[in-house]
Image (tube, rainbow, N blue to C red):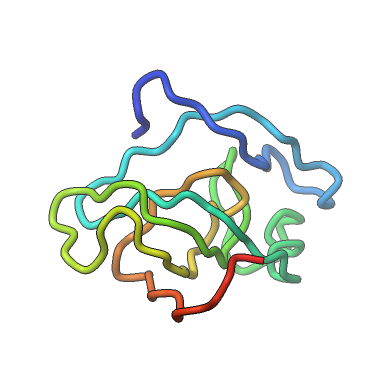
Length: 122
């Protein structure tokens, strides 16, 4: 599900291959569902499991197309129904199966942890 008419940039995997096969594309901005928050991604790590994932050599194999990237930090933009722990403007970190190589991501609130005071996104 996405926000009507809104798009963002994301690194998209459409077939198994090396990281060089990934493409920067415009995709719909996700809409947070029940229990999810929409996060503006400010930082996302690049890990060896991401390389394995896009090569099809990781135990999890998402359906195509998918957006890699599992460890993110950012700012909550919006919350879906039922969210109680975080509000827009909160600085958070999250670990997800994939989706982090994007400007925005919808993530279950249960996967979030608050960023420590004084920690920057750099």
